[in-house]
Image (cartoon, rainbow, N blue to C red; front, side, top):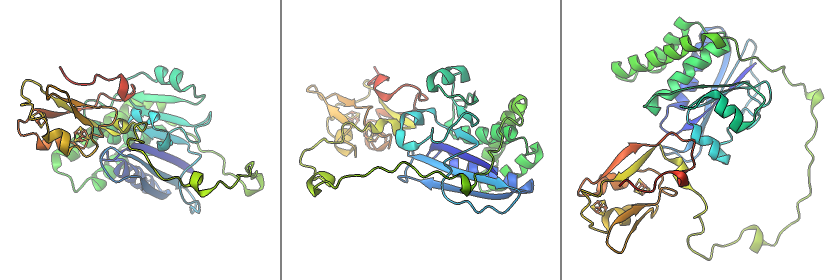
Length: 308
Ligand code: SF4
Ligand code: SF4
């Protein structure tokens, strides 16, 4: 059985990418399962989707803990432990990352024994998922180019013609570019129940409820959770146009991520701005604009705090 896991962020089309791969594998004669798993349902939240394909009925259910191929549409997800990108990536698992950095950089950074591939997703993160699908289809070695094109057309038929065409173009470009990696993904041997080894269970002591389920008695307890890693776009203040109204953006930011200096200048806390763009909408001077998030190999704190 082929087991493929896709990681991305809400709004990047990860669910659709899984459906395209699933449809293409089905058209090639496989039994197929594809499913997404959502966390918080909003743009930018980590999303994972699964595709299983086999030439026999698929009885396996649930998340894929031991994949053959892992696709990552947003490299900043490696910084988010709960996204689980590295789960089950052993020496035979292929990892394909949409990133501007070379695969060799990621090999050194992640210190994984398995094959790592990368490609530049271009300026529009919305295209990363379709390009991943094209590259993955080629790496699997079992999907023909015309079948990929037909599956893409079928799954994207609700989009306008221009978007369909550009998505198809990106997917087929990636398919062609990954020709040298055709067949790079192999299937793991099916696990037998006879080989099952029980985990090493440990005994947990019962804590008093005051420790096990503590109340929060202080404010700002979540400051350590850097929700800025969720962003796909960042608000940027143009100080030449900001009127220093001093309260609108800072008051209406749902995450209290805009502070105001003594001289009424607003400052965005990029460690905790989640990129909802409420401030862009409400600023009466149109002094805040949305910029693409620098694609994510650096943690948010390393990025500049505000635009000059
Ligand atoms: S709402 Fe706009 S004008 Fe007012 S402080 Fe914020 S950026 Fe400046
Ligand atoms: S985008 Fe603006 S309103 Fe939304 S969290 Fe960031 S600073 Fe706050």
